[in-house]
Length: 280
Ligand SMILES: Nc1ncnc2c1ncn2[C@@H]1O[C@H](COP(=O)(O)OP(=O)(O)O)[C@@H](O)[C@H]1O
Ligand SMILES: [Mg+2]
Image (tube, protein in one colour):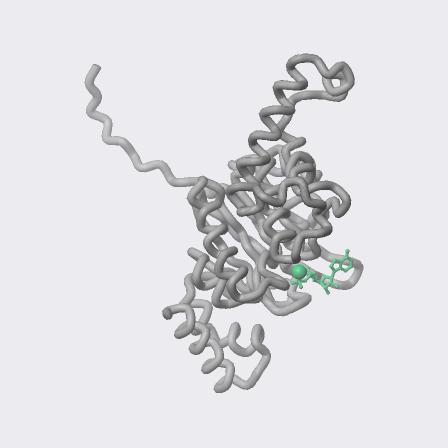
């Protein structure tokens, strides 16, 4: 069969589409009418001073908070504001304050993250039939792969609480990846890391993206953000004041004054120095 119809390019729908999200706590508007998209394969940055509403915004995306207003769509479907349903839909996250099971092993922590993807129910677990054992073996294999990917394979049997801080952050990422997400939200992944660990974390984020997982990342480390991100949005007092590539963000006077909160001249220099450093 021949056809003369010219193929129309399909408009690519974003993976994540946040529309006009507002979150109020009593009289405080923590997030104010924020819209943001993350496309397939993108790494998007979210920056802003402490208290700007970044973590609250993540909580609105992941069902921890029900936004006062606004809609969150993932793969063109409105997300129900329930954390386990958001995870099932394909969004995983890490927390600014690390949330690991301290007295479980590294491997067990990743297995917990895998839980949302295993079909084995409680009866199967009690009966421990062949399908339970098969599923468990597969989960372990997958978890060990993720530990190798994040550089923690030799720590599999260590207790999570005995890991150094930087490795606990990596373990949180491994656990988040265990749910097979299409989108990973990272809340200050390099907080508390030394410079070498931070550079390694950049490589890890790129490697995750190369696996086909899109990323939305909150960070204070400008060098990290501008090395990694295709676009960066800036939140100030709950509002998105600018969004764009590195030049757009770094040259925006509102960012320089509001975000850095220092006299214009010196902050321009500070931002320019960040650029120079990242170019090295
Ligand atoms: N559950 C809550 N109840 C009341 N206020 C909150 C709650 N969560 C966050 N806030 C407030 O919302 C604002 C934004 O906080 P947050 O999202 O943690 O900022 P950021 O992550 O950008 O540092 C802060 O003023 C904070 O005190
Ligand atoms: Mg925060």
